[in-house]
Amino acid sequence: MKRKVCMLRFFFPSSLLFSTYYECFLRFVMEIPISISRNRCNHQLWFVILVSFLFFFVFICFDYSSLIGTQSRFTVFLNHYQNSNDTLLKTKPLFSPDSSCLGKYIYIHDLPRHFNQEFLDNCDQFHVGTERNMCPYLANSALGLQVENADGILSNNSWYSTNQFLLEVIFHNRMKNYKCLTTDSSIASAIYVPFYAGLEIGRYLWGAEISVRDKSAHDFVNWVSTKPEWGKMFGRDHFFVAGRISWDFRRQTDNHTDWGSKLRFLPESRNMSMLAIEASSWNNDYAIPYPTCFHPSSNNDLFEWQDKMRRQKRTYLFSFAGAPRPDLQKSIRGKIIEECQASENLCKLLECNYGANGRITCDNPVSVMKLFQNSVFCLQPTGDSYTRRSMFDSILAGCIPVFFHPGTAYAQYKWHLPKNYKKYSVFISVKDVKEWKDGINKTLGSIGEDRVLAMREEVISLIPRIMYADPRSRLDKTEDAFDLALNGILQRVDQFRKLIREGKDPSIGFADSDDYKYTFSGYVGEN
Image (cartoon, rainbow, N blue to C red):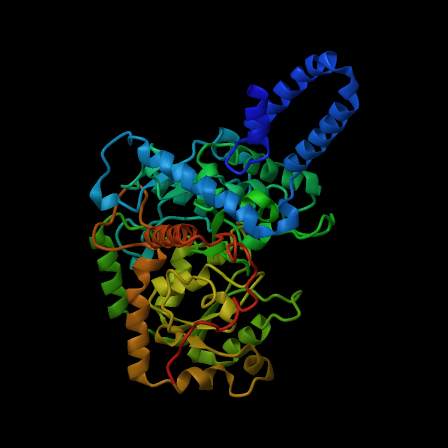
């Protein structure tokens, strides 16, 4: 009787699990010798049945998902997601959720120390864009040493010698003070993974073998993908922050001469979002502002600085802080410097060269702020990459940025800057500068005073959005760059949750390359 029931189930397998098939197989095989001993003349028939059973057993075990396409694999994922969430809904949270944090809870992974803290413990062995070790920059929650208010250029005690490559550490310190943290991952809207990817790869960008450059990347994705939180959305609710540009993590080949690591091309990493100081053209990378040297600890400190910039008298029509890039064929910096020098009293140049003490002049926030505060427009050409911290320094100073490529700002900081780029900036085509048609003097000088005042006010209003408040405090009347970045990532994760609930595949478009990202696509400007 058992054999008949088992055989009946075998031929109607649509609602059975693999274990049922296996149980039937064992029972069937164990009973075969008994049947054969009772009627040896039927042994050939039983042999045929057994062989047929084995072939059918192999057939149902075969992974044919690759033959029937992505939809079946997604169906498996969708069933897993629904079952996972059903389980979470039945699980009692570890505490009563705060209604003001609903949809905003963040769970932080507790990574092994070698992914983050060990970099800080051994800070004297690391050099982050400087000839000195990074230890001094880690003071004051990674804001750096406090800067004296020389000659009244700065205000209050909100200025620090912040290194532009320490975003991941500053962000982590801010996250530790985030009001909607949770230790219960079942109610978290997003999962933050505090991997200091920028500090890690910064050690090996020059001269190291690709196996060395990629080791931590593999260790990282192997660690995070084995955690229970990963299975909920297979990492699509996970994000991490990098203090370097995204291109440092997107080496597309295994040629030793190619730059960077392949972190962002690892399958697990592709399912995560990365926030970096400059994004690539892939959809799972998002740009958030470089850390500047201004970190107010109160709303009053912020408002006081904004008022100071509104009252500031500006001597120069435009200015430029930077150095030429003679090795870059497409660089326009040389022509910009030439025109600035030829413009006499209209332009002020701050050359970013190493001084006698080995310190770059433009690394001094007093020198930079003094220049930009006295300028109506601040020129922001591309450098070694599309973006530069100087554009955020100019906004801090109430100086209207002038861009020469959409990839410097417009295509990058979509969570932090207005969609209408003409409200706060001027765009000069790179082609126009190279051909030197009207020149920068004429272009900027032709802008009416009313529009200049309106753009300056817009720039000053952007200051809270592009600076990171002191991690040891919390601003309660405005959102800073950290807050806007979290809002952006929470909205992104929620968008993909909606797709899953609608029965759509969340992998479509999640990590695709966007060929239009570095154009004016999606942006508007005034006529």
